[in-house]
Amino acid sequence: MKSEIRNPRSERNPKPDRTVGRRAFGFRISGFFRDSGFGFRVLAFLFAPLSVLAASVVDSKHNLSASGPGTIKAATETEVCIFCHTPHRAGPELPLWNHHTSVATYTPYSSSTLKASVGQPNGASKLCLSCHDGTVALGMVHSRSAPIGMQGGVTVMPAGPGNVGTDLSEDHPISFTYDAALAAEQGELRDPGLLTGKVRLDHSSQMQCTACHNPHDDQYGKFLVMDNTASALCVTCHTDPLWSGSAHRTSTAPLTGTAEKLARPGAKTVAASACGSCHTSHAAGSGQRLLHSTKEEQTCFTCHNGSVVAKNLAAEFNKASVHPVMQTSELHDSGEDPLNGSRHVSCSDCHNPHAARASAAPAPKASGALLGVKGVTRGGSPVQSAVYEYELCFRCHGDSLSRGEAHVNRLLSETNTRQEFNPANQSFHPVTAAGRNPNVPSLLPPYTTASLIRCTDCHNNDQGPDAGGSGPRGPHGSAYAPLLERQLLMTDRNPESASGYALCYKCHSRTSILADQSFKSHRKHVVDEKTACTTCHDPHGVASEPHLINFNRNYVSPSASGRLEFVDRGFSSGSCTLSCHGKDHTDVSY
Image (cartoon, rainbow, N blue to C red; front, side, top):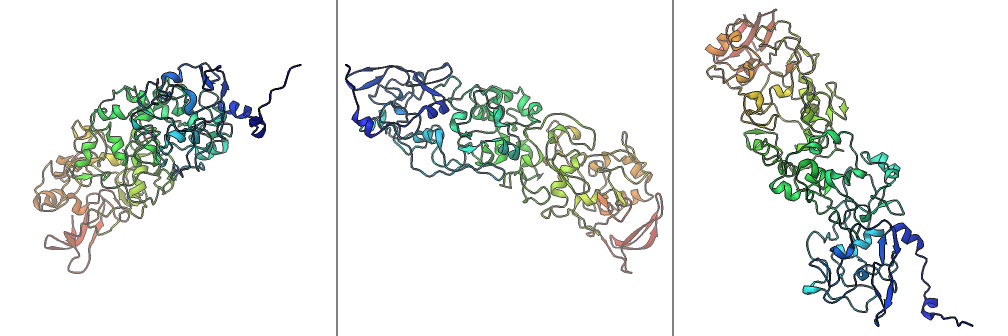
């Protein structure tokens, strides 16, 4: 008759059933043990993924034993798995967790557009942080009566990429429920029901560190669960319908310098790095949006400074007239009010980096560089994706209460550019609709009175292709204020010249203007009296006056009778009552 052997310790402290936990974390016991005189010693893995291991933890930095390949390892300890797991005297955490966990309070990731409820780390993430937050000694394990000693006097995780600290505001959010409701509310997230590959949620449908990292397999680097070339891992969860055709997804431009250092390890092109060219999952510079740099434009300038992208955009913002991305510190927020957001300028206010591409479009439609950005219609309604270029411009230069001041002291002051281009106005340049004047003999081919133009036909880089230069296109910077593609003198007493009024002469024939084909006294005013075009004309539009007449009050004042007006009397005919250049005009006809 066999005698029954009992373990009094086991009866006093019965072990909980860990079957569910082992299954949830995807591990199973697969090792064998032997009595070494010091208790049971692990000869093979205590825990191995259910799938066949492609790379062994023994050959990775997570082997903290004395035989480990990394620089952080034990002084004499030979067991590999003991730093995380133990078959006996484990803590309450699954699966058979051996390492002491942290009691730190963490600062979680947050952003104005985040819909997930992110609290304190739990589950597998809490276990990872027991080493990686740098607050608990690496050798603090339940199965040893004293901490395991480490080489070089190391106790906790040293400063560096492996130590994420307790401030997780600059790290990808973890320990939140990722379900279909969140995916629908957040947008640009895949339904978690599709996560049936290597990226998995935990048994509570929560996103944990283990969704992206397999602590036992480092074959892809950084213990990633899959190869992240072209951000294959990122797009397993994140989705954007415009991303697949964007320049940041398809560009084969080689990475160099800082861009190569910040990109996904091993990536040699923009396409191979993809999301990693701008974003990082840990220790981001910006916190919100997880950008490499604290200031958004510095992230963009990593490539757009002539090192990766041929055109040097960074240099454009050093010009006399610029969109002031260097002077404003706020990040673009996709959740901000498109009509009355705070006054700032950042690259992504005008460009959607997940959608932008090099494709042309006929005026006044938005080009591929502006694809996927919010806008405001000519009627004043916000739109999710601007169709016309002017819809983007109207976001800041239209109804915004914080729009800029007028550049010219006009008789009829209007700083709402959307209203200036209102098709109901008496006159306007044809940006939102074809112009009202059927007689414009000065127009240069291919322009006709039916033509439409863009804002960037006038506001653009003075050294860009449209100005005859080799610089980048776009209203990033110009030598001529306000961000004009060509010179336009706005003060009187300047000699008339092709260069002084080059912007006007881009579309209007200088020969025709000076021959008085549009107006009988053009030459008298511009050449003889040295009157600037903008002294009489408001180039955007005027609600109540034809021919873009809106006098500059710095040079034009009321007549002796107190009147300041222009009266239209038909094509190339009219009369003025005003005082200009010291001369009083009363119903002077032209």
